Every structure is written in C-alpha cells, then in structure tokens.
Length: 345
Length: 239
Image (tube, rainbow over all chains, first blue to last red; front, side, top):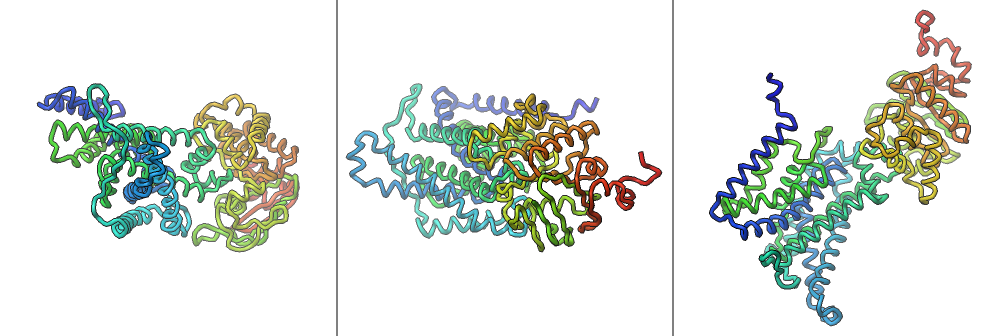
C-alpha cells in the first residue's frame, strides 16, 4: 500500500503540474492581468529566455562534452557583447557602407557584429581552453578526472576575465545603438525590433547547432567524444582537437548571446555574472546536459521571471529564476528532459 | 607486422607491464592469453595509444608507433576492437559503423566498407536503424568488430570477443574472425577463453605478471602442461 505513495516519474509530473496551475491561478488573480500585459509578458519572456537558453546551451554542451561545469561562461557572454560593440563602433561611422546599402544599413552592420562576436569568441574559447584549462589535465585521465580543479579554475578565470575587461573597456555601461528599424506591430502590440531579433537569431543558432550535431560528420564526432573519449580515440577521432572545438562552439554561442542582448539593454563589464546564474537555472530546469532542454529551460525561466515581476512583484526580479530552480530541484530533480546519468564532476 | 619489444607501461604510478616481448606475423591470428590483471589489456591499450608506453618499443609495419596519438595509430591501420559494451548506445547501428570509418576521406569508400561489414555480419544489416542500446550481447560484439573493420585496417586487435557470450555465439564470432583473416587482415586476440582462442589461433602467448611466460604454436600450447594447469583446468575437472 505504501508503495503507491512513492513519487515516481508520474507523481513528479502531477505535483509539478499542480504547482504550475497554482502559479497560473495566482497570476490570473492579479489586478494587472489583461490581454495586453499577457502579450508583452510573453514577448519579453521569450526574448529574455532565448538569451538564457543560448548561454545554458553552451553550459550544457561543455558539460556533456567535457564533463565539467564552466563557471566562466558568463564572461564569454560579456566579452562577446564587447566584441560586437567594438565592431559596431568601427563600422558605425563608415559612410561607404551607408552609400552601398542605404536601406539595409543598420541590420547589415548588426549581422557583421553578430558574426564577429561568434568567430572571435569561438577563437577566444579555444585559446582559453588550450592555454588555461588543458594544462590541468596533464596528470592524465582528461577532463573527467581533473573535474574539480577545472571548476575552481573556472571561478578564477571568471574573476580574471572581468578584471581584464574592466582594464580594457572601463566599468561604465555603454549603449549599443544598433539601428534596426522602427518597432513592429504584432497583434496590436508595438514591439521593439530588437526583441524579434533576439528570438529569431537565437532560435536559428539553436537550430543550426542541432543541424550541425546531427547531420554533419564533425557533429557525429562531437557526439561520440561526448559519450566516450576512449572509444572515440579508438575509432580515430582526434579527441583533444574535438574538445577544443566543443569549448569553442559553446563560447561562440555565448558571444552571440551577448551581442543580441546589447541593443536592448546595455553593455557593461558586470553583465556576465547574473546571466551565468540564470542560465545555470535554465539548464537545471531543462535537464542538465540536455541541449533541447537548455533552450526550453531558458524559455521557461524567462517567461516565469517576466510574468512574476509583472503580476507578483517587480522589485524582486532576480529572485524568481532561482526560486523556479529550487522548486524544480525539489519536485523534479532531473529537470524537464534530464535523465539520471553516471557521476560527472 | 606488430613487434613489441621490452614494453614497460602501467596506469598512474602502478607498473603493470614489466618488459613484454611479442611478435605478430602478417596474416596470422595470434592469441594473447592470461588471467585477470596480468596485463593483457594493458598491452592492447599501449599499442593503440590509449596509455603511454614508459619504456620499450612498439613497431608496426617497421615503424615505431609507441606514444603516437591514438587517432594516428588508427590512421596507420592498427585498430583495437573494444569489448561489446563499448558502443555508442544512443546512436543507431549504421551511425556506430560510420563512426568506425571516421578517418576515411571519401564517402564512396565509407559506403563500400559498410557493405563489406554487412556482408560479414548480416544480422547487423537487419538491425541497421535500431539504436545500439537495443542489441543483444552477440550483436554488440559483431557491431564492435564491424566498427573496427570500417577504417580499412591492416591489423585488428580484439579485446575479449567472447566475454559474457553463449558458446554458440562465440563460435559464430570466431568463425567470422577466421574469415577476416582469410581476407588478408592480421588479427591479435586477447582472450580468457583459452581453449577457444587456441583452437582459432596459429600462435599463442601466455602473459603472467606483465611478462610473457610461455609462447609457442597453438597446437603445442594446448598440450603444454603449465598452460593446461593454469588455464585449461586440471585433469579432474576437465569437462
């Protein structure tokens, strides 16, 4: 009889569903609830969520591939934003681009900035991995064995990167005045075009990563390396190279995230820290190490956070992501799509 | 083809191999026998570059290959076939096989080799779209051998192909290993199933405490008193 009281997968889902219903009920009861506010909650939530999702995607990718959690990932996001901004300032006052493309001037420059952030952060990630993380695995066993050292190193790297950025760009928040066009009207709601850009570019990056991992030969190699380094070695995959590639891709995606956020908010040296924490929450909610889960978790955290700050209390905005993470860990410890896996550092 | 000379190696600071010598002739099947923890698998891991060789040389086709990166050793045509549990369970059989041919440059070559492997193991062809996790033990072992054959190797090294399999399936797999040899490959088999391995092989090495203890023609080894005593069971329990 008591056997039936044990919380299985089904029980977890029922309790979590009850929680979601209670939460929705709370929001609906709020005096601010109307169709207009719901629309803006959804768009802002989705656009913020895709940013959390992109960073979470990188964290999950590094976790599946290298078996470690990269706690300096937020700083790649921040430096990516600065890389995009630097490119923007370089191109922003070039008249010849304006002369060639008078209509599409703004977004062509912005696409170049996104591309710059992607490539430069990819190379920077490979550099960091080779120079600072790889030597920690000298004793043998690769990343799986050196796990805890790498995690501590990630914290240190985060502090170092913040301070290097501080030296280069100083701590003043900088605007990123990308000229992407007028607000767009969707369903009676005027949305700043940067929100649309975030969602569209973010989803394209996620889809591109899915295609890359599942349909190309290099992606097949990455999935093999993520599962087992030894067997990958034996089929002739250059495992050290592939580990660098995994790290580079994760950092490149974070860089794109940074440049996407730039025009909506501001670019500032300390933007990486809170994003890292929320992306971590998103990865946990979606199921740690699961790539589609990272994006879904990002959307969930984004919408939950925005809805709560609209309908419950706006003065505790940063609290909700972690509240959701705690609830998910209590009720459904594997997250939405996670599975219980062997021990990873 | 493969020549191992005074090989010393181990894990961390634990030395397992204390100067092993062995030779594998071209187009032969050689069995490397020994109990648990004697260093059989360590020789394979050192030869395929998964662990470092501390001292001694490993020669393949006249070139020294010790301490080369593992993927370069595969590129030279020396491939280790893992035990059946070492597949990629979340990928289909075809994907697993394609990973085996990862170093191949041309797509046509990959498809040809895929055809060749399905020819060796028709069972894999029947299950090509299934996830590897759903295969039976024997099929997993076939998949591992097939994956090893995908990269056009000159020599394959099998790590306990009979582990945890029913005798009938072991026989089937050993027949296929013989077929592979007849098609021009060199085979090194590491085994605990001494009787079966000696029936298959031309030449045998018995390893004990990290050195080669006994070696000789497999027919001779089968009647060797020390081998009989240690591995084939005494006269009383000879079933």
